[in-house]
Image (cartoon, rainbow, N blue to C red; front, side):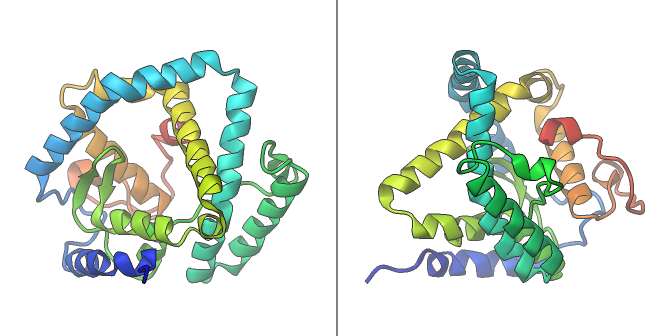
Amino acid sequence: MTIPNFLRILPFAGTILLTACASPDEGRGINDPYEETNRAWHDRNVALDRAVIRPVSNAYGTAVPDPLRRGLSNVSDTLSIPGAVVNDLLQFELGDAVHNTARFAVNATIGLAGLFDPATEMGLEARDADFGETLHRWGVTEGAYVVLPVYGPSTERDALGLAVDVALDPVGSLLGSNERKAKTGLTVAELADTRYRYSDIYESIIYESADSYAQMRLTYLDQRRYELGTPIGSAATGETEGGGSYDIYEDFYE
């Protein structure tokens, strides 16, 4: 009997939840007890970027016209909307759930399966939601900072959120094997386009910083805390400030 994907991650989920709940409150500096291991994975990820990801993304960005790259990224974004709707419901954000459902319906039909984005022009802008955010809404603290293979910077809470989002993907669960491969290909194309589009900013962090690990850690934690509405600016100093500050990393992550 095949074990559902969600059940397979339950042991991992329990460990992460227990660790995260026992960790210091988020927004109060850097919690990095795994720094030695994290730095090793960071170095491997940088080496992978230099050897594979950067040349592939540059080739993709050079060979594929910008309108087509944007269109493929739009399709990938549209396919991710049902997952956002699930998290909206889990967070009891019914308004966002209705908004994202309408966005999906418009782009999947008028937008030709998501190739175009007429929904944004109609006032149905993207409102992302993920299971890491859902856990935050449920009171789970961010836990320790971790670096994931290939994926890069995360926290224990967001690592669990990523695993659950993959396991519970509503669209992926309805597709056949060939369609799932195509969906994965679209995701890879979107990541390659993002890497190419923001290469100057990304490379200034990982190749030009005196300590690229520390800079990436600071960038990720401040950005994620900003997204979740928790105090920002604290990853560097340990001091907390009220919400409402500007997003200093907006250009990098959009």
